[in-house]
Length: 427
Image (cartoon, rainbow, N blue to C red; front, side, top):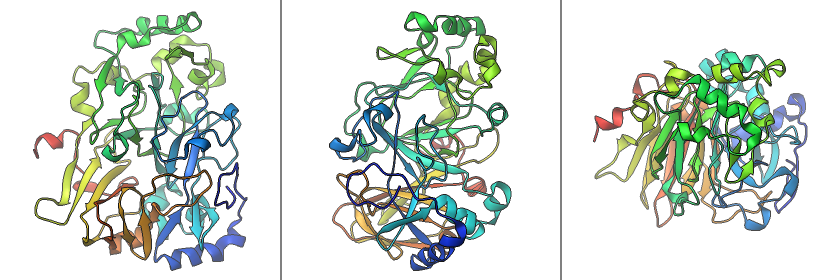
C-alpha cells in the first residue's frame, strides 16, 4: 500500500532492493533492530466480518463490496493473500520509517535476511516463513482443511499448519457461533465424506453431521496440522501459522450461504477438480477420526517467566510440534503499570499489542481503540533476531496492564518449547 494516513483504497509501490537498500538499513538502525509495521488488512469475500479488530465500521468494505468485508489483520507478514482480484501486495506487511510506509517486510528480509530472521531460518528457508493474523467473523467458517507440503507442492505452493489463541481483550462478545467443529467423529468412513461431496449442489451437504463442535474459551487455543478438517467459530482468533494461504472447503453451505465448488478445489491440481476420491484421500484420516482429539490439539497458557509476586508474566500460548517439528510458537507478555523488564528470546518475532501503552526499545507502543483504513498505528513491531537475542526492554508507561502477543519462527525455542498437553502437568 502507498502511504496514506486516512481511509483509502491503496496498493503498494514496487520497491527494488537497490533503490531501497539505504532506507532499509536506515530504518533498522534507527529502531536498533526493531521495525515499526503498518496495519495489514485482508478481506474475505466468502465470510462476514465480526467487527471486533478495531477497524472503523465505515471502512469494513474499504476495498469494495465485491472484494468482501475486511475480517483479518495480518502481522509481520511476508506472505501474499491468495484472494481473487487482490493486488500483488495484499497481505504483505509494510515497514514504517519517519511516519511513512517505505518498503515491505518481505523486501527487507530479502536484503538483510540473516540479520532480521537469524542464520538458521535464513539458511534453510531464505525468507520469514511464518506469519500471524487476527481473524474475526460474525459466524463460523466452512469446514475445511489446509494442504500438506506434498499436496501443495503440486500447485507450486507450500502446506499450511496453523494454531489458534483467543485473546480475552478482543472477545468480550462471542458473536454468533463461538464453537469450532474439528475433524470427524470416530467411525466416519471415506464413503460418508464422498457422499457429502456428491451432494454439493443440493444445499447443505451435511458434512457437519460427521463432526464434533468444541466450545471456544477466551485465553485458550488449539494446534491444527495440515489435512485436518476444522470449521473455526466466531471468537476473534490470533493465528500463528506457516507462510501459505492454501485451503480446501469441504462444506457446501454455511449459515445459509452457498460455498462455491472452486473454494474446495482451488489448491488441488486442475485435473483433480472433479475427482471426489482424490478429495477424500487428501484428508489425514487418522488425525481426523482420533478419539482423543482434544488431548492432542488443545492448548492452555503455560508461564515461562514472571508470575505471582512479579511485575510481569510471560506465557506460552502456542506451542507443540507438527509432525515432530517446531514450526511456530507464540507467547503473551503482560506488564503491570510502571513495570520495566528486559526479555531475551531465542529468535526474531512479530509483536502486536492488545491492551495498554508503553515502550519497546526506542519505540512507543499504543493500543488503538479504532483504526481508519490506511492509518498508521503504534501497536505492531517486528523484532530482529539480533535484537531479540541481545534482549529487548519493555516498559509499561500507562495505568492498565500492557499486554503483547509475539510469535516466533521455526526451530527457535528448541527444548524450552512445551509439548501439547503440558498445561495439565503445570496446574
